[in-house]
Length: 254
Image (tube, rainbow, N blue to C red; front, side, top):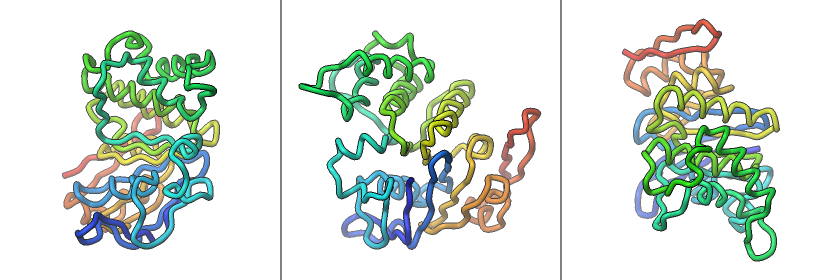
């Protein structure tokens, strides 16, 4: 569903941020990209979302180059959540979530009953239904994050690309967000996230892709990927894994 093959990418006038990177997220799969700060994770995610063209290699979302189609057309297939989301106008929480229905709207862009229903359902799943009437600019950082996640989910896209979806969230809401994302696999969505939370990645991801210094270090199941010696070298710490009572995994770094 989401595939990068031999991708080299970077910004104009600067050396490449990532070199010869290949990985994919299949339908019904949640893949977490992890790695140290500055490793190239966000740049690769922007390439996957069609916001940047690679210098070399190919990118496909459902078989299409995401940078080569109109954004509204792409939005029917791909939902993207950046690290930072700013709005200049005092929209309500519900209005922000409804922006995710833009690609599905008919006529002059008026909200249909189906759009409102999809938005409210996504807000319930992200535990922000009570923020529907609140101004977005009055919400806390964590509340804003959950509102824009609801916006991404209500798109109904089969490819979901998220940069730090649990940033600024307390532990309970972070687990809730990852649970909601994991549930998207039931409708064959492919979910690709960047995260610094190795515990959540180990617990919820089907696979972990590790990027270090702009190169692919590991691409495997969470247990295998995080146990690779090259991953410890990439992070600069030793990673120890354990098992939770519910069968999930946790990671301790030292």
